[in-house]
Image 1 (cartoon, rainbow, N blue to C red):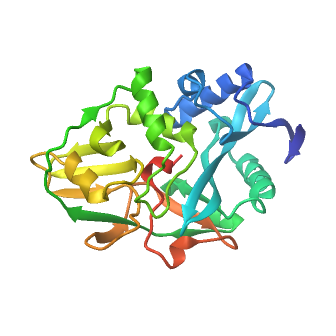
Image 2: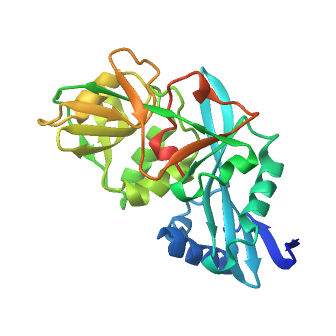
Length: 296
């Protein structure tokens, strides 16, 4: 679709994944701005219909983008469809021309009435940009508790092996039964993390049929997410994942049962959560966080 923005003509396209030329140009811009490439993710078959770039092209070159991430979640057993905006980027030579504004307005036009909530994580350089579209800051809270080691067999999964990927995907079908706001049916985003950023941090506990994505940092266990049928307790899994030095676990999701957990504001460098006003905002009255592995 041709569009005129402040006197300049561009081509607007969305859902670019199967257009080789546009996708590669998109990847070049993502590499330049964020140091990220989606190409291997695409080639591995994980780029599905839940990640939708809205791009502007000048000729055959992608010059601006805002991506829609469809996030299926659940709150108090009610299914929710949230939209997370991400990969917001403009080629340096095209900044200040209104391209991001045009794309934001297009995304909101398409999704405002089709979703329960729209949100994004902004870096510090653009904190004044998103309120212009009706977004407001929200505070996230993170839960932690003291734990000790329990001896149960844990296997580290190899994300280059088909059988280990199958174990992960089988467990993911159950989602996280311990999470107040679980990520559901988003295999693409899960595998973006587990095939790249978190590929060394995926574990299987056969006794509980559980896959755990976790990292050890000195005496801390950071448990990003858990996928299992839920026939055990969260404590069973956390204590199994602890090692001899572990004194404390920090959760990458909000637990359904918060008793015995300590809670504190979750603050991440150069990252601020914004939620669109006029839509659902669970963060106003609840001490929550979006799962770390749902952050696009």
